[in-house]
Length: 113
Image: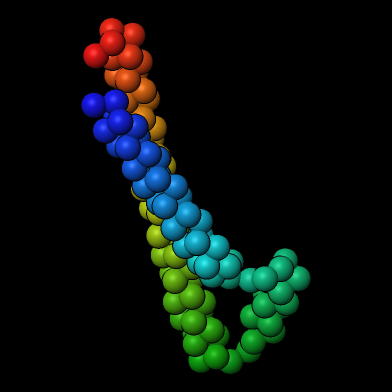
């Protein structure tokens, strides 16, 4: 039974490692898509360009474009938060399960059976 517990513990912690690695890859791929501007200078240049627009049609088109991209950035950030929270939950559950398995194994090793 101890070997079963050790194998189960290894499987739980292996699953935790896989979930963590998958979350890291998702974060690495999607984090760059959250920033709307690459730098404060780019943001300031965009503000200057908007302030210099005199045609209301162009300004409306620019506003619609900015709102659409702002929504996409917010949706990506929200998705990344969900991934982070889900990963944290899996890690917490796996850690609790591992600690309980270790406690169970210690108790059974002390009693000899």
